[in-house]
Image 1 (cartoon, rainbow over the protein chains, first blue to last red):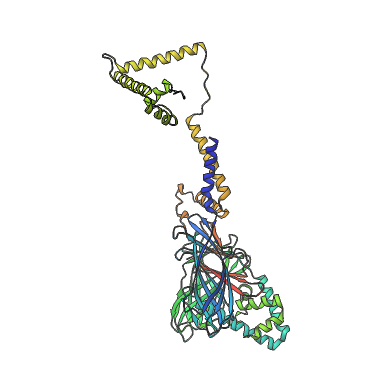
Image 2 (image 1 turned 180 degrees about the horizontal axis):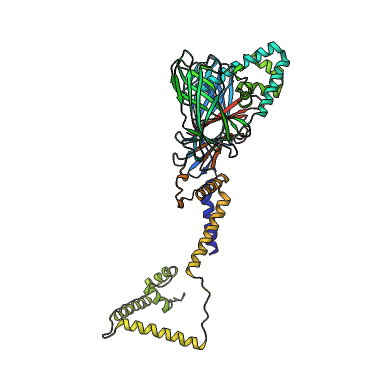
Length: 366
Length: 211
Protein backbone atom coordinates (compact mmCIF):
# COMPACT_ATOMS: atom_id res chain seq x y z
CA UNK A 1 0.00 0.00 0.00
CA UNK A 2 2.83 2.34 0.95
CA UNK A 3 4.55 1.64 -2.35
CA UNK A 4 1.38 2.61 -4.19
CA UNK A 5 1.23 5.94 -2.34
CA UNK A 6 4.83 6.72 -3.28
CA UNK A 7 4.10 5.71 -6.89
CA UNK A 8 1.07 8.00 -7.01
CA UNK A 9 3.06 10.85 -5.47
CA UNK A 10 5.84 10.37 -7.99
CA UNK A 11 3.35 10.38 -10.87
CA UNK A 12 1.79 13.60 -9.60
CA UNK A 13 5.16 15.26 -9.28
CA UNK A 14 6.02 14.16 -12.81
CA UNK A 15 2.68 15.44 -14.07
CA UNK A 16 3.33 18.82 -12.51
CA UNK A 17 6.89 18.91 -13.79
CA UNK A 18 5.51 20.19 -17.10
CA UNK A 19 5.58 23.61 -15.40
CA UNK A 20 9.35 23.54 -15.69
CA UNK A 21 11.15 25.54 -18.32
CA UNK A 22 11.58 24.35 -21.88
CA UNK A 23 14.12 25.37 -24.46
CA UNK A 24 12.92 27.99 -26.88
CA UNK A 25 13.10 27.46 -30.62
CA UNK A 26 13.83 30.64 -32.56
CA UNK A 27 14.02 31.93 -36.09
CA UNK A 28 15.49 35.14 -37.52
CA UNK A 29 13.93 36.14 -40.80
CA UNK A 30 15.16 39.21 -42.70
CA UNK A 31 14.12 39.91 -46.31
CA UNK A 32 16.79 39.12 -48.91
CA UNK A 33 16.95 42.78 -49.95
CA UNK A 34 17.08 44.10 -46.36
CA UNK A 35 19.59 46.89 -45.68
CA UNK A 36 20.92 44.88 -42.73
CA UNK A 37 22.38 41.41 -42.45
CA UNK A 38 22.87 39.14 -39.47
CA UNK A 39 26.45 38.92 -38.24
CA UNK A 40 25.73 36.90 -35.09
CA UNK A 41 23.09 36.05 -32.52
CA UNK A 42 22.94 34.97 -28.87
CA UNK A 43 19.87 33.51 -27.16
CA UNK A 44 21.28 32.66 -23.72
CA UNK A 45 18.62 32.73 -21.01
CA UNK A 46 15.69 32.46 -23.42
CA UNK A 47 13.14 29.89 -22.27
CA UNK A 48 9.45 28.99 -22.26
CA UNK A 49 7.46 28.12 -19.15
CA UNK A 50 3.96 26.64 -19.12
CA UNK A 51 1.43 29.01 -17.50
CA UNK A 52 -2.08 27.61 -17.62
CA UNK A 53 -2.99 27.27 -21.28
CA UNK A 54 -0.05 29.25 -22.61
CA UNK A 55 3.69 29.35 -22.75
CA UNK A 56 5.22 32.33 -20.96
CA UNK A 57 8.20 33.04 -23.15
CA UNK A 58 11.30 34.89 -21.97
CA UNK A 59 13.16 36.20 -24.99
CA UNK A 60 16.71 37.30 -24.23
CA UNK A 61 18.38 38.02 -27.49
CA UNK A 62 21.54 39.83 -28.56
CA UNK A 63 21.92 40.33 -32.30
CA UNK A 64 24.92 41.62 -34.13
CA UNK A 65 23.76 43.32 -37.34
CA UNK A 66 25.68 44.76 -40.26
CA UNK A 67 24.63 47.80 -42.26
CA UNK A 68 24.43 46.33 -45.76
CA UNK A 69 23.17 49.55 -47.33
CA UNK A 70 24.98 52.58 -48.68
CA UNK A 71 23.35 54.98 -46.22
CA UNK A 72 23.80 55.64 -42.52
CA UNK A 73 21.26 53.95 -40.28
CA UNK A 74 19.57 56.14 -37.65
CA UNK A 75 17.12 53.66 -36.16
CA UNK A 76 15.85 50.10 -36.37
CA UNK A 77 12.77 48.24 -35.14
CA UNK A 78 12.54 44.45 -34.94
CA UNK A 79 9.34 42.48 -34.42
CA UNK A 80 9.51 39.62 -31.93
CA UNK A 81 6.58 37.32 -32.55
CA UNK A 82 5.46 34.40 -30.42
CA UNK A 83 1.88 34.35 -31.71
CA UNK A 84 0.26 37.04 -33.85
CA UNK A 85 -3.32 36.83 -32.59
CA UNK A 86 -2.61 36.33 -28.89
CA UNK A 87 -2.70 39.33 -26.55
CA UNK A 88 0.88 39.68 -25.39
CA UNK A 89 2.12 37.43 -28.19
CA UNK A 90 3.84 40.23 -30.04
CA UNK A 91 6.64 42.55 -29.02
CA UNK A 92 9.15 44.88 -30.56
CA UNK A 93 12.72 46.00 -29.98
CA UNK A 94 13.69 49.43 -31.23
CA UNK A 95 17.03 51.18 -31.15
CA UNK A 96 16.81 54.92 -31.91
CA UNK A 97 19.65 57.46 -32.01
CA UNK A 98 21.98 55.20 -33.99
CA UNK A 99 24.67 56.39 -36.36
CA UNK A 100 25.83 53.30 -38.24
CA UNK A 101 27.93 53.83 -41.34
CA UNK A 102 27.70 51.47 -44.35
CA UNK A 103 29.47 48.16 -43.63
CA UNK A 104 29.62 48.77 -39.86
CA UNK A 105 28.14 46.35 -37.35
CA UNK A 106 26.01 47.28 -34.39
CA UNK A 107 24.27 45.34 -31.63
CA UNK A 108 20.61 45.08 -30.73
CA UNK A 109 19.73 43.58 -27.37
CA UNK A 110 16.27 42.74 -26.15
CA UNK A 111 14.71 41.17 -23.10
CA UNK A 112 11.02 40.58 -23.65
CA UNK A 113 8.29 38.54 -22.03
CA UNK A 114 5.67 37.18 -24.44
CA UNK A 115 2.83 34.65 -24.50
CA UNK A 116 2.01 31.83 -26.89
CA UNK A 117 -0.94 29.47 -26.54
CA UNK A 118 -0.10 25.81 -26.09
CA UNK A 119 -1.14 23.78 -29.08
CA UNK A 120 -0.38 26.28 -31.82
CA UNK A 121 2.83 24.48 -32.61
CA UNK A 122 4.86 21.47 -31.60
CA UNK A 123 7.18 23.54 -29.42
CA UNK A 124 7.37 27.11 -28.12
CA UNK A 125 8.96 29.31 -30.72
CA UNK A 126 9.65 32.97 -31.47
CA UNK A 127 10.43 34.65 -34.72
CA UNK A 128 12.45 37.84 -35.06
CA UNK A 129 11.83 39.86 -38.20
CA UNK A 130 12.54 43.35 -39.43
CA UNK A 131 9.77 45.95 -39.13
CA UNK A 132 11.77 48.88 -40.33
CA UNK A 133 15.02 50.76 -40.72
CA UNK A 134 15.28 54.56 -40.76
CA UNK A 135 18.18 56.18 -42.63
CA UNK A 136 19.86 59.53 -42.11
CA UNK A 137 17.97 60.98 -45.11
CA UNK A 138 14.71 60.02 -43.32
CA UNK A 139 13.96 57.34 -45.90
CA UNK A 140 12.49 54.17 -44.50
CA UNK A 141 12.75 50.50 -45.39
CA UNK A 142 10.49 47.75 -44.02
CA UNK A 143 6.97 46.31 -43.86
CA UNK A 144 6.04 48.82 -41.09
CA UNK A 145 3.40 46.52 -39.56
CA UNK A 146 4.02 48.12 -36.15
CA UNK A 147 3.96 51.68 -37.58
CA UNK A 148 7.61 51.95 -36.67
CA UNK A 149 8.29 54.48 -39.46
CA UNK A 150 6.22 57.07 -37.62
CA UNK A 151 7.69 56.27 -34.23
CA UNK A 152 11.29 56.24 -35.40
CA UNK A 153 10.71 59.42 -37.38
CA UNK A 154 9.55 61.17 -34.17
CA UNK A 155 12.60 59.92 -32.29
CA UNK A 156 14.92 61.08 -35.08
CA UNK A 157 13.29 64.52 -35.28
CA UNK A 158 13.56 64.84 -31.50
CA UNK A 159 17.21 63.79 -31.69
CA UNK A 160 17.98 66.46 -34.31
CA UNK A 161 16.09 69.11 -32.32
CA UNK A 162 17.89 68.26 -29.09
CA UNK A 163 21.36 68.03 -30.64
CA UNK A 164 20.76 71.41 -32.24
CA UNK A 165 19.71 72.81 -28.85
CA UNK A 166 22.80 71.45 -27.08
CA UNK A 167 25.11 72.66 -29.86
CA UNK A 168 23.60 76.14 -29.62
CA UNK A 169 24.00 76.03 -25.87
CA UNK A 170 27.65 75.00 -26.25
CA UNK A 171 28.24 77.88 -28.64
CA UNK A 172 26.50 80.41 -26.38
CA UNK A 173 27.42 79.25 -22.89
CA UNK A 174 30.45 77.02 -23.45
CA UNK A 175 31.27 73.78 -21.64
CA UNK A 176 29.92 75.08 -18.34
CA UNK A 177 26.54 75.90 -19.85
CA UNK A 178 26.27 72.48 -21.45
CA UNK A 179 27.38 70.78 -18.25
CA UNK A 180 24.78 72.72 -16.27
CA UNK A 181 22.07 71.57 -18.68
CA UNK A 182 23.26 67.95 -18.43
CA UNK A 183 23.12 68.13 -14.65
CA UNK A 184 19.66 69.65 -14.63
CA UNK A 185 18.44 66.93 -17.04
CA UNK A 186 19.89 64.33 -14.68
CA UNK A 187 18.09 65.93 -11.74
CA UNK A 188 14.75 66.00 -13.62
CA UNK A 189 15.19 62.32 -14.51
CA UNK A 190 15.61 61.48 -10.86
CA UNK A 191 12.55 63.49 -9.81
CA UNK A 192 10.22 62.31 -12.58
CA UNK A 193 7.27 60.42 -11.09
CA UNK A 194 6.19 57.08 -12.54
CA UNK A 195 2.82 55.93 -11.30
CA UNK A 196 1.19 52.61 -12.02
CA UNK A 197 -1.50 52.81 -14.71
CA UNK A 198 -3.58 49.98 -16.15
CA UNK A 199 -5.19 50.17 -19.55
CA UNK A 200 -8.36 48.18 -20.18
CA UNK A 201 -10.25 48.13 -23.44
CA UNK A 202 -13.98 48.84 -23.22
CA UNK A 203 -16.02 49.45 -20.12
CA UNK A 204 -14.69 50.20 -16.68
CA UNK A 205 -15.40 47.91 -13.75
CA UNK A 206 -16.22 50.76 -11.40
CA UNK A 207 -19.20 52.87 -12.40
CA UNK A 208 -20.24 54.00 -8.92
CA UNK A 209 -20.48 57.77 -8.54
CA UNK A 210 -19.31 58.42 -12.10
CA UNK A 211 -18.83 62.05 -13.09
CA UNK A 212 -17.70 63.91 -16.22
CA UNK A 213 -14.45 65.84 -16.10
CA UNK A 214 -13.23 68.41 -18.61
CA UNK A 215 -9.71 68.35 -20.05
CA UNK A 216 -7.50 71.44 -19.78
CA UNK A 217 -4.99 71.86 -22.62
CA UNK A 218 -1.44 73.10 -22.98
CA UNK A 219 -1.51 75.34 -26.05
CA UNK A 220 1.43 75.22 -28.46
CA UNK A 221 1.25 78.23 -30.79
CA UNK A 222 3.19 76.47 -33.56
CA UNK A 223 1.27 73.21 -33.43
CA UNK A 224 -0.75 72.42 -36.58
CA UNK A 225 -3.55 71.08 -34.39
CA UNK A 226 -5.44 72.95 -31.70
CA UNK A 227 -7.32 70.97 -29.02
CA UNK A 228 -10.78 72.54 -28.68
CA UNK A 229 -12.27 70.58 -25.82
CA UNK A 230 -12.36 67.24 -24.13
CA UNK A 231 -14.12 65.19 -21.54
CA UNK A 232 -13.71 61.83 -19.73
CA UNK A 233 -15.88 59.86 -17.31
CA UNK A 234 -14.28 59.58 -13.88
CA UNK A 235 -15.28 57.04 -11.24
CA UNK A 236 -13.01 56.66 -8.23
CA UNK A 237 -9.56 55.75 -9.50
CA UNK A 238 -10.74 55.09 -13.05
CA UNK A 239 -11.03 57.33 -16.11
CA UNK A 240 -12.85 56.03 -19.14
CA UNK A 241 -14.13 56.93 -22.58
CA UNK A 242 -12.11 60.09 -23.19
CA UNK A 243 -13.57 62.28 -25.91
CA UNK A 244 -11.50 65.06 -27.50
CA UNK A 245 -12.23 67.59 -30.20
CA UNK A 246 -9.30 68.88 -32.29
CA UNK A 247 -9.07 71.48 -35.03
CA UNK A 248 -6.59 71.47 -37.93
CA UNK A 249 -5.27 75.01 -38.24
CA UNK A 250 -2.57 74.11 -40.76
CA UNK A 251 -2.91 74.30 -44.55
CA UNK A 252 -2.16 70.55 -44.86
CA UNK A 253 -4.17 67.35 -44.42
CA UNK A 254 -3.41 65.54 -41.17
CA UNK A 255 -3.50 61.73 -41.06
CA UNK A 256 -2.26 60.99 -37.54
CA UNK A 257 -2.29 62.76 -34.21
CA UNK A 258 -0.92 61.78 -30.85
CA UNK A 259 -1.82 63.54 -27.63
CA UNK A 260 -0.46 63.22 -24.12
CA UNK A 261 -2.82 62.73 -21.17
CA UNK A 262 -1.60 64.15 -17.84
CA UNK A 263 -3.50 63.38 -14.64
CA UNK A 264 -3.32 65.28 -11.36
CA UNK A 265 -4.61 63.58 -8.21
CA UNK A 266 -6.19 65.11 -5.12
CA UNK A 267 -2.80 65.20 -3.37
CA UNK A 268 -1.30 67.33 -6.12
CA UNK A 269 0.75 64.58 -7.79
CA UNK A 270 0.94 64.94 -11.57
CA UNK A 271 1.97 62.18 -13.97
CA UNK A 272 1.73 61.22 -17.63
CA UNK A 273 -1.06 58.66 -17.63
CA UNK A 274 -1.10 57.60 -21.28
CA UNK A 275 -0.78 58.69 -24.86
CA UNK A 276 -3.82 59.02 -27.11
CA UNK A 277 -2.88 58.11 -30.66
CA UNK A 278 -5.46 58.54 -33.40
CA UNK A 279 -5.49 57.74 -37.11
CA UNK A 280 -7.62 60.28 -38.97
CA UNK A 281 -8.06 62.24 -42.13
CA UNK A 282 -8.37 65.85 -41.07
CA UNK A 283 -8.48 68.41 -43.90
CA UNK A 284 -7.27 72.01 -43.32
CA UNK A 285 -9.55 74.18 -41.18
CA UNK A 286 -11.73 71.29 -40.10
CA UNK A 287 -12.38 69.64 -36.75
CA UNK A 288 -12.64 66.04 -35.65
CA UNK A 289 -13.42 63.98 -32.56
CA UNK A 290 -11.04 61.48 -30.98
CA UNK A 291 -12.89 58.69 -29.18
CA UNK A 292 -10.51 56.01 -27.94
CA UNK A 293 -12.30 52.95 -26.56
CA UNK A 294 -10.29 52.58 -23.38
CA UNK A 295 -10.36 52.86 -19.62
CA UNK A 296 -7.44 53.80 -17.44
CA UNK A 297 -7.19 52.56 -13.90
CA UNK A 298 -4.80 54.21 -11.48
CA UNK A 299 -3.51 53.28 -8.06
CA UNK A 300 -6.41 52.65 -5.66
CA UNK A 301 -5.41 55.71 -3.56
CA UNK A 302 -5.48 57.99 -6.62
CA UNK A 303 -8.48 60.27 -6.89
CA UNK A 304 -8.44 62.14 -10.20
CA UNK A 305 -8.58 65.89 -9.55
CA UNK A 306 -7.85 67.30 -13.01
CA UNK A 307 -6.68 66.26 -16.49
CA UNK A 308 -4.48 68.03 -19.00
CA UNK A 309 -3.92 67.21 -22.67
CA UNK A 310 -1.22 68.32 -25.09
CA UNK A 311 -0.35 67.59 -28.71
CA UNK A 312 2.79 65.45 -28.80
CA UNK A 313 3.12 64.65 -32.53
CA UNK A 314 1.31 65.16 -35.82
CA UNK A 315 1.75 63.34 -39.15
CA UNK A 316 0.71 65.04 -42.38
CA UNK A 317 -0.68 63.30 -45.40
CA UNK A 318 2.67 63.43 -47.20
CA UNK A 319 4.38 61.51 -44.37
CA UNK A 320 6.19 64.50 -42.86
CA UNK A 321 5.81 65.11 -39.15
CA UNK A 322 5.55 67.86 -36.57
CA UNK A 323 6.88 67.65 -33.02
CA UNK A 324 6.88 70.31 -30.27
CA UNK A 325 9.94 72.57 -30.08
CA UNK A 326 12.21 72.81 -27.02
CA UNK A 327 10.57 76.16 -26.26
CA UNK A 328 7.09 74.63 -26.28
CA UNK A 329 8.27 71.78 -24.07
CA UNK A 330 9.79 74.27 -21.61
CA UNK A 331 6.56 74.22 -19.62
CA UNK A 332 6.97 73.49 -15.89
CA UNK A 333 4.37 70.69 -15.98
CA UNK A 334 5.80 69.03 -19.10
CA UNK A 335 9.36 69.26 -17.85
CA UNK A 336 8.26 67.52 -14.67
CA UNK A 337 6.18 64.67 -16.13
CA UNK A 338 7.30 64.02 -19.71
CA UNK A 339 10.48 62.05 -20.34
CA UNK A 340 13.15 63.67 -22.50
CA UNK A 341 13.92 62.30 -25.95
CA UNK A 342 15.94 59.09 -26.28
CA UNK A 343 18.79 61.20 -27.68
CA UNK A 344 18.87 63.50 -24.65
CA UNK A 345 18.87 60.44 -22.38
CA UNK A 346 21.73 58.93 -24.43
CA UNK A 347 23.81 62.12 -24.18
CA UNK A 348 23.12 62.44 -20.45
CA UNK A 349 24.26 58.81 -19.96
CA UNK A 350 27.46 59.56 -21.91
CA UNK A 351 27.99 62.58 -19.65
CA UNK A 352 27.38 60.50 -16.55
CA UNK A 353 29.81 57.80 -17.68
CA UNK A 354 32.54 59.68 -19.57
CA UNK A 355 32.14 63.39 -18.79
CA UNK A 356 31.38 66.59 -20.69
CA UNK A 357 34.23 66.19 -23.21
CA UNK A 358 32.70 62.93 -24.47
CA UNK A 359 29.34 64.69 -24.90
CA UNK A 360 30.97 67.49 -26.92
CA UNK A 361 32.77 64.91 -29.09
CA UNK A 362 29.47 63.12 -29.63
CA UNK A 363 27.73 66.35 -30.67
CA UNK A 364 30.50 67.08 -33.16
CA UNK A 365 29.77 63.81 -35.01
CA UNK A 366 26.49 65.17 -36.33
CA UNK B 1 18.89 -44.37 -12.92
CA UNK B 2 16.75 -41.38 -12.26
CA UNK B 3 13.54 -42.14 -10.42
CA UNK B 4 10.35 -40.66 -11.92
CA UNK B 5 8.50 -38.52 -9.33
CA UNK B 6 4.74 -38.16 -9.96
CA UNK B 7 2.88 -35.05 -8.87
CA UNK B 8 0.53 -35.21 -5.89
CA UNK B 9 -3.03 -36.25 -6.66
CA UNK B 10 -4.33 -33.01 -5.14
CA UNK B 11 -2.26 -31.08 -7.69
CA UNK B 12 -3.61 -33.25 -10.51
CA UNK B 13 -7.16 -32.56 -9.29
CA UNK B 14 -6.50 -28.82 -9.18
CA UNK B 15 -4.93 -29.01 -12.64
CA UNK B 16 -8.02 -30.81 -13.97
CA UNK B 17 -10.32 -28.05 -12.68
CA UNK B 18 -7.99 -25.24 -13.84
CA UNK B 19 -7.37 -24.09 -10.26
CA UNK B 20 -3.65 -24.80 -10.14
CA UNK B 21 -1.53 -21.61 -9.89
CA UNK B 22 -0.45 -20.36 -13.30
CA UNK B 23 3.26 -20.65 -12.65
CA UNK B 24 2.95 -24.42 -11.78
CA UNK B 25 0.78 -25.36 -14.74
CA UNK B 26 3.46 -25.58 -17.50
CA UNK B 27 5.61 -28.05 -15.54
CA UNK B 28 2.62 -30.22 -14.67
CA UNK B 29 1.32 -30.08 -18.23
CA UNK B 30 4.72 -31.28 -19.45
CA UNK B 31 4.63 -34.18 -16.99
CA UNK B 32 1.04 -35.20 -17.83
CA UNK B 33 1.78 -35.17 -21.53
CA UNK B 34 4.53 -37.78 -21.03
CA UNK B 35 2.98 -39.86 -18.19
CA UNK B 36 0.05 -42.17 -19.00
CA UNK B 37 -0.67 -42.83 -15.34
CA UNK B 38 -1.06 -39.19 -14.37
CA UNK B 39 -2.94 -38.39 -17.58
CA UNK B 40 -5.48 -41.09 -16.68
CA UNK B 41 -5.86 -39.49 -13.22
CA UNK B 42 -6.48 -36.10 -14.77
CA UNK B 43 -9.06 -37.56 -17.16
CA UNK B 44 -10.74 -39.33 -14.26
CA UNK B 45 -10.91 -36.12 -12.20
CA UNK B 46 -12.36 -34.27 -15.20
CA UNK B 47 -14.99 -36.96 -15.76
CA UNK B 48 -15.96 -36.93 -12.06
CA UNK B 49 -16.30 -33.18 -12.17
CA UNK B 50 -18.60 -33.33 -15.14
CA UNK B 51 -20.73 -36.00 -13.45
CA UNK B 52 -21.02 -33.95 -10.26
CA UNK B 53 -21.92 -30.86 -12.24
CA UNK B 54 -24.68 -32.80 -14.04
CA UNK B 55 -26.04 -34.12 -10.76
CA UNK B 56 -25.99 -30.70 -9.14
CA UNK B 57 -27.90 -29.26 -12.02
CA UNK B 58 -30.82 -31.56 -11.33
CA UNK B 59 -32.93 -30.10 -8.47
CA UNK B 60 -34.65 -32.83 -6.40
CA UNK B 61 -38.41 -32.94 -6.99
CA UNK B 62 -40.60 -31.15 -4.45
CA UNK B 63 -37.80 -28.81 -3.21
CA UNK B 64 -38.83 -25.15 -2.81
CA UNK B 65 -35.48 -23.36 -3.22
CA UNK B 66 -36.63 -20.02 -1.80
CA UNK B 67 -37.89 -21.63 1.35
CA UNK B 68 -34.68 -23.69 1.63
CA UNK B 69 -32.52 -20.54 1.29
CA UNK B 70 -34.56 -18.74 3.97
CA UNK B 71 -34.20 -21.69 6.35
CA UNK B 72 -30.45 -21.80 5.77
CA UNK B 73 -30.11 -18.09 6.56
CA UNK B 74 -32.19 -18.48 9.70
CA UNK B 75 -30.04 -21.41 10.83
CA UNK B 76 -26.87 -19.37 10.33
CA UNK B 77 -28.30 -16.53 12.45
CA UNK B 78 -29.39 -18.95 15.18
CA UNK B 79 -25.89 -20.42 15.20
CA UNK B 80 -24.33 -16.98 15.57
CA UNK B 81 -26.71 -16.01 18.40
CA UNK B 82 -25.93 -19.27 20.18
CA UNK B 83 -22.23 -18.56 19.86
CA UNK B 84 -22.76 -15.09 21.42
CA UNK B 85 -24.21 -16.81 24.52
CA UNK B 86 -20.96 -18.74 25.03
CA UNK B 87 -18.57 -15.83 24.34
CA UNK B 88 -19.15 -12.44 22.70
CA UNK B 89 -17.65 -12.07 19.24
CA UNK B 90 -14.70 -9.74 18.91
CA UNK B 91 -15.44 -7.18 16.17
CA UNK B 92 -12.49 -5.56 14.35
CA UNK B 93 -12.89 -1.79 14.30
CA UNK B 94 -13.80 -0.96 10.71
CA UNK B 95 -14.26 2.54 9.31
CA UNK B 96 -17.61 3.26 7.75
CA UNK B 97 -17.64 3.51 3.97
CA UNK B 98 -18.18 7.30 4.09
CA UNK B 99 -15.14 7.85 6.29
CA UNK B 100 -13.01 5.73 3.97
CA UNK B 101 -13.97 7.94 1.02
CA UNK B 102 -13.26 11.07 3.06
CA UNK B 103 -9.85 9.75 4.13
CA UNK B 104 -8.98 8.85 0.53
CA UNK B 105 -10.05 12.32 -0.65
CA UNK B 106 -7.96 13.97 2.06
CA UNK B 107 -4.94 11.93 1.00
CA UNK B 108 -5.32 12.82 -2.67
CA UNK B 109 -5.84 16.51 -1.77
CA UNK B 110 -2.68 16.51 0.35
CA UNK B 111 -0.82 14.91 -2.56
CA UNK B 112 -2.02 17.48 -5.08
CA UNK B 113 -1.32 20.42 -2.74
CA UNK B 114 2.22 19.10 -2.17
CA UNK B 115 2.80 18.69 -5.91
CA UNK B 116 1.39 22.21 -6.50
CA UNK B 117 3.54 23.74 -3.80
CA UNK B 118 6.66 22.06 -5.16
CA UNK B 119 6.13 22.79 -8.85
CA UNK B 120 3.68 25.59 -9.62
CA UNK B 121 5.21 28.96 -10.54
CA UNK B 122 4.30 31.63 -7.95
CA UNK B 123 2.56 33.81 -10.57
CA UNK B 124 0.19 30.94 -11.41
CA UNK B 125 -0.72 30.53 -7.74
CA UNK B 126 -1.27 34.27 -7.39
CA UNK B 127 -3.51 34.30 -10.49
CA UNK B 128 -5.56 31.40 -9.13
CA UNK B 129 -5.85 33.20 -5.80
CA UNK B 130 -7.12 36.31 -7.59
CA UNK B 131 -9.72 34.29 -9.48
CA UNK B 132 -10.99 32.64 -6.31
CA UNK B 133 -11.04 36.03 -4.55
CA UNK B 134 -12.91 37.57 -7.48
CA UNK B 135 -15.53 34.81 -7.41
CA UNK B 136 -15.93 35.25 -3.66
CA UNK B 137 -16.32 39.02 -4.02
CA UNK B 138 -18.71 38.78 -6.99
CA UNK B 139 -20.86 36.17 -5.24
CA UNK B 140 -22.31 34.73 -8.45
CA UNK B 141 -24.70 32.62 -6.36
CA UNK B 142 -26.33 35.95 -5.46
CA UNK B 143 -26.59 37.05 -9.08
CA UNK B 144 -23.29 38.92 -9.31
CA UNK B 145 -22.42 37.42 -12.71
CA UNK B 146 -21.75 40.77 -14.40
CA UNK B 147 -18.81 41.48 -12.14
CA UNK B 148 -17.24 38.20 -13.25
CA UNK B 149 -17.12 39.17 -16.91
CA UNK B 150 -13.54 39.03 -18.11
CA UNK B 151 -12.44 42.40 -19.42
CA UNK B 152 -9.53 40.76 -21.26
CA UNK B 153 -5.87 41.26 -20.74
CA UNK B 154 -4.67 44.53 -19.27
CA UNK B 155 -1.46 46.38 -19.87
CA UNK B 156 0.03 47.96 -16.81
CA UNK B 157 3.00 50.26 -16.63
CA UNK B 158 4.87 51.12 -13.49
CA UNK B 159 8.34 52.15 -12.47
CA UNK B 160 9.30 48.47 -12.67
CA UNK B 161 8.35 48.12 -16.35
CA UNK B 162 5.50 46.70 -18.40
CA UNK B 163 3.20 44.05 -17.03
CA UNK B 164 0.60 42.07 -18.89
CA UNK B 165 -2.20 40.99 -16.58
CA UNK B 166 -5.23 38.75 -16.89
CA UNK B 167 -7.74 37.81 -14.19
CA UNK B 168 -5.73 39.82 -11.71
CA UNK B 169 -2.63 37.70 -12.23
CA UNK B 170 0.57 38.90 -13.85
CA UNK B 171 1.30 37.04 -17.06
CA UNK B 172 4.70 38.55 -17.42
CA UNK B 173 6.90 41.57 -17.36
CA UNK B 174 9.18 42.71 -20.08
CA UNK B 175 12.84 43.29 -19.32
CA UNK B 176 12.61 41.45 -16.04
CA UNK B 177 16.25 42.03 -15.12
CA UNK B 178 16.72 45.72 -15.86
CA UNK B 179 14.82 48.77 -14.63
CA UNK B 180 13.53 51.08 -17.38
CA UNK B 181 14.31 54.80 -17.42
CA UNK B 182 10.77 55.47 -18.58
CA UNK B 183 7.61 53.64 -19.56
CA UNK B 184 4.69 54.86 -21.63
CA UNK B 185 1.22 53.47 -22.12
CA UNK B 186 -0.86 53.91 -25.24
CA UNK B 187 -4.63 53.62 -25.14
CA UNK B 188 -4.38 51.56 -28.32
CA UNK B 189 -3.26 48.69 -26.09
CA UNK B 190 0.50 48.82 -26.19
CA UNK B 191 3.22 49.91 -23.86
CA UNK B 192 6.85 50.84 -24.31
CA UNK B 193 9.72 50.72 -21.88
CA UNK B 194 12.98 52.56 -22.47
CA UNK B 195 16.30 51.16 -21.30
CA UNK B 196 19.79 52.66 -21.45
CA UNK B 197 23.00 50.69 -21.62
CA UNK B 198 25.11 52.05 -18.79
CA UNK B 199 28.39 51.67 -20.69
CA UNK B 200 27.56 52.74 -24.24
CA UNK B 201 24.51 54.91 -23.63
CA UNK B 202 22.65 53.00 -26.36
CA UNK B 203 18.91 53.34 -25.92
CA UNK B 204 16.71 50.27 -26.43
CA UNK B 205 12.94 50.58 -26.44
CA UNK B 206 10.87 47.44 -26.06
CA UNK B 207 7.18 47.33 -26.85
CA UNK B 208 4.46 44.88 -25.87
CA UNK B 209 1.12 44.72 -27.63
CA UNK B 210 -1.89 43.51 -25.66
CA UNK B 211 -4.46 44.03 -28.37
